[in-house]
Every structure is written in structure tokens, then in C-alpha cells.
Length: 64
Image (cartoon, rainbow, N blue to C red; front, side, top):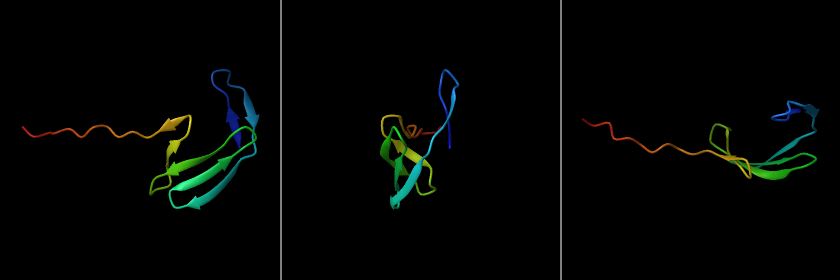
């Protein structure tokens, strides 16, 4: 896998490992980080500890 650093845009090759722990939970590790990523039913990452978490916008009432 290739990692592109921001803002320097330096490109680095990184060995990564992915292991499915159970539906909805993936163990990720590389040389500098290891953690469990939360997945939705379609396999998209919804929780990446220390980096990002999916949020849902509030529902709007569109009634006249």
C-alpha cells in the first residue's frame, strides 16, 4: 500500500495487515499503528479511532 503524507505529499510504501474480527469490526495494523475499525453493513469504515467517525446529519422535517 502507498501512504501519501499531507501536507508534504511525500509518498511512502507501507506494509498493512487487515483481519476481520467479526462482522462490523476489522483489525488494522501497520508499522506505526494498530487499531480496530468499525464497518457498516456495506463494508465502509465508519469509525477509525483517532482519525474519523461517521456522523449522520439530523433528520429534517420537510412538512409544509
